[in-house]
Image (cartoon, rainbow, N blue to C red; front, top):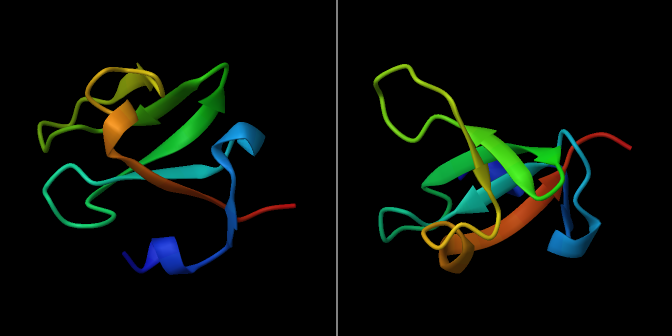
Length: 74
């Protein structure tokens, strides 16, 4: 949640690689974060097992849980 208060909020339609995307996956705001990599995809670690995944923003699980995106660089 602290990361979600930093940077500047951007519209999902303006995502650029390196922007952070936040999701509500545990019934609490900003409980999951990923790094947008372009072409509608983001990289994230969905569990604590050390494996990193690439998922699509329109993924049926993540799309309805999207909360906001933040830019931290120009």
